[in-house]
Each structure stands twice: as C-alpha cells, then as structure tokens.
Image 1 (tube, rainbow, N blue to C red):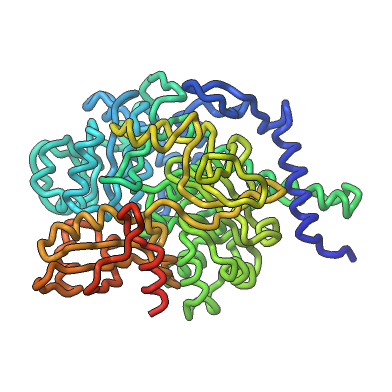
Image 2: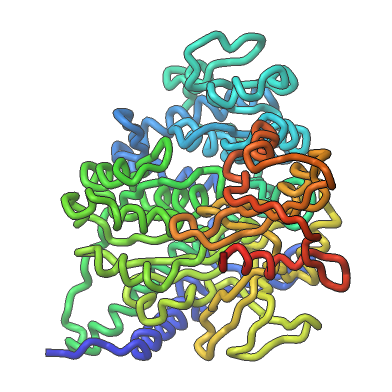
Amino acid sequence: MTSEPSPGELIDDFNAAFASLTAAGAPFGWTVQEINGVPVRVYDNAIPDMRAVWAMSAAHGDKDYLVYGGERYSYADAHTRVRALAHHLRAAYGAGPGTRVAISMRNYPEWVLSHWAAISVGAAVVGMNSWWTRPEMEFALADCEPAVLIVDGERLERLGSARGEVPLIVTRHGGEIGGSALRWESVADPSTAPDGLPEVAIDPDDDALIFYTSGTTGSPKGAQLTHRAVVHNLMNMVFMAACGDAARAIRAARATDGDEPASPAAEVKALLPVPLFHVTGCNCVMHTVTIAGGGLVLMYRWDAATALRLIETEGVSVFTGVPSMSREMLQHPDWERTDTSSLRSMGGGGAAIPTDLVRRIDDGLSEGRPGVGYGLTETAGVATAISNEFYLARPSSVGPLVPCMEALVVDENGSTVGPGGRGELLLRGPNVMKGYLNQPDATAEAIVDGWFHTGDVAEIDDDGWIHIRDRIKDVVIRGGENVHCSEVEATIYELDEVAEAAVFGVPDERLGEEVAAAVVLVPGAELDAAGLVAHLEGRLARFKHPRHVRFQDEPLPRNANGKFLKRELRERFTRN
C-alpha cells in the first residue's frame, strides 16, 4: 500500500508536468513575440481567433450544448442559429472587425448564441451588466457605440425612451417591441441559415470582447480584450487541466512502473450561476465548455436549492461560482439529500476562497475536489489557477501562473520584491487587455511598459505560486461583483444634506464583502439610512447600495493628504 503524497511531493509533480508540457516542441510550448511593442510569451500552437474556436465545436453535432429550463440546444442546433444571425448582423448592420455588438440580457441561450454570431463575423461583443440601471446602460451605449444592441424584454423596458438611439434585436419579450426593432427569433431563424459563416478576415489583435469593470476613478471602464487575449485565456484553462492530469500520470507511473492505464476523461457538464457579462462566466466557463464539447446549464438567477436540483438532474460535473455560492449550497438543508456525486470540481473565482471553505468543499464532495482561479477582467480571465489535490497542498495560494503570464511583486517605490515579500502584483502576457475603451489616461495608468498593475497586494513563494493578501484599489468585491466606491460616494454626494461620505467594504460571511458607508451631515440637516438608500434607487444597481450606513457627528478621519482613512473606518464598523 502506497502512502499519500506529501504537499511538497504534489507540488513537485505539478511543476514537473508544467515544465514538460511547456517545453520547446511540446503541445503548450511558447516563444516570446513582440505584440504592440511589448515582449510577451505566445503559444506556438495558438488557435488563430475565436471564430476558429466556434468552428471547431461543430464537430460535436447532436451533443447537448445549452440547457435552460425545459429548453435544450444541441451543437448542431446552435450552429444553425448562429449562422443565420451572423449573416443578418453582417448584412443589416455591417457588423465586422472594428464594430461592436452589445448584448444586454440575463443568462439566456440567446446570450451565448448572439456572442458566437457576433464574434464569428469579427465584431467585438460588448457584455452589458444586466443589473445596470437606465443611466448606467445609457453611459455604456454612448461609450461603445454598438452597431446593434441585442436585448431581452426586461432590459428593453428599463432602457425606456433611449431604446430609439440604437438598432435593436429583442428576445424574451411578449408584448409590442415597437419601431424598427426586430425579434431575435426572426433573425436567428434556422430555416434561413446559409451553409457557412460570412467570410471575414480577423486579426488576432482585433477586439473580441469588451467587458465593463469598476476601477478607481469615475464611471465604469470598458476593457478591450483581443482575440489573442481571449484565445490565450482559453488555452491557459485547457493547459491547467492537462497539467493536473499529467502530474497524476507522473505519480501513477512512479507507483506502478507505468503499467496503470490512464482514466478516460469525464464528460464536461457545467452549471453557470454567474453572469455571462463577466470574464468568469463567459471566458472561463462558457468558452472552455464549448471547446471541450461539453454541456452548459444556464441559471436565470442564483438560488442554492435550484442549483442543487440542477446538479442532480443534469449530472453537472463542474460548478464555478463565487465563494458564497459554494458555501450556501454546502450549508443548504437539501445538500445531504441531493445526489452530488457527478461533481468533479467545485469552486471558482471573483473573490478569494477562504481556507476553511476549501476544506469544506473537499469534505462535502464524494467524488470531486475544490478549484480556484485568480484573474481580472483586464487579464481576460485567469492569471493563475489550481485545483484538486494540488490546491489542497497549498490552500492559501491561488496557484501558479499560467504558462504565458509573467508576474512581478513591487514595493511602493516600484522596486521588485523577492520571494515571500509583499507588494503590488504586476502581470504581463498576451491575455492582458489592449486598454480601456476611450480612456487613454486610465490605460496609461494601468499598463506601464507592458505590465498591468492589478492593485492587489501579493507575495510569490519559492515555487512561484501566488498568494493574494490584500487590495490596494478602492473596490469592494461583493459576491463577485465589483463595486466602485467613488461611484457610490459621488451619488451620495448628490444629496444636499451630506457633508462627507466614505464608502468601503466590510467582511460578510455570505458574500465575502458588503458595502458600507460612513456619512457626516451638514449641520442642521436631517437624513436617515432609508432616505439615503431611497436616493440611490434607480441611480445605481442595488448591489452597489450600502447595506451598512452610519452617521457620524465628527469629521471622518483623514491622512495628511486629506484622504479618508478607510482602513480605520472599516475597523470601527467591524469592531462595533
């Protein structure tokens, strides 16, 4: 009987597999190329563009691709609808390289199919946050200037009179859509689909996706993710799974003299509880499921009981969400009476996974293991990833860097910090965004000499694995959603009664963080928490509303430069 490998042995095997798979001439070998003046590592066998990724999936034919409630679409069904819509987008709106197609809807099958149609004609897909209010939607539409907006009924009604400013394709709407708007079903009609996609030339550095992210200043910023960036994220995801398999093969060969046959790869069926308008849902789940020929089970909204039912009835093998979702399922009364034996992986990203939850996931799954990925919108997905027994070997880490990513940790003076030292994490690679749409100053601040400044405090250990310790950026991550503090503060300051306002995050067991606000009123003014939140209603999406509001009589604490001491305020909220 062989003993269980130690954490050090597991990591050694993983690193050995990593080196083997990325060696010159290996499937994931890479060379340094200069992209837009920056030397980056590029896979030698990189897929040319995302159109090619979609074309490859046609081979999966009648296999289930999308499941939504009682609706099911095979790969063949999906390709027929995508071809019809792609030709319409090209002919009716001139969609192609240099243009944009915006999508604003829930996680419906139409989101996925519209994405592939637009990306296959070379247009950049703009994923609009479905929780946005009308002013937020109007801002994004004015910023990205799409050739067409594909929208569901709920978002159409929210857009109101502004709907007339952009051509519309509407789905999931039972009433009158009005004007020149077209119904999705009529332009994605399988009976009208030509045999192939429209002919178009796509450059790897053309925009493929634009996702809006909250930063440290002003309004949301549209991160421009190129075909090269998105393809490399996809290949990184595939690589990390392959690396784990190769590491197990090394261990098995050592234990059995190489006679043990490899286990067949399990069928991939992923539950998607997170929005498609984020890189996690789109790039890290939907894209990887598609290239694997797997099935994608879509959820209208998050509900732990519904998720458990779908895991059992659909035989879900992969669950990727924010940490609070995994915790809610594990704590749900239905967990023990639900058959979750199909699950092989449970975890995700969007927020750090607490070490206790890593262990709970491992204990709770009969056949599966936990997994984590660290990345940002600006990196098109993961910069690091690790799962299964290798994650358990170092659960406080977010894993090693993906092959084509480089990292530095720098101190406040910009000097590189050695292993074990803390500082800001900088990343460079082909999957770093091109820039922020229409915001050259913000781009120049975020990317310096090709290095993207993450705003996260990290350390790199002796094995090159990353540990995220804190955040520099003034952003609250609430259940995987970024809340831009200055945006909330600016909206609070619209109230004449407010003299000072500071917004920050406080710990929350379910969501990771919740939004809190410390407020000082103008002398003699009257305002309570209900009045403040009522002011935010309709101006900001509800996930941005402070759930904890405290009014103070004395001025808020500031440093010598006049900036609020939010760490001190956070400690006060947490302590009391």
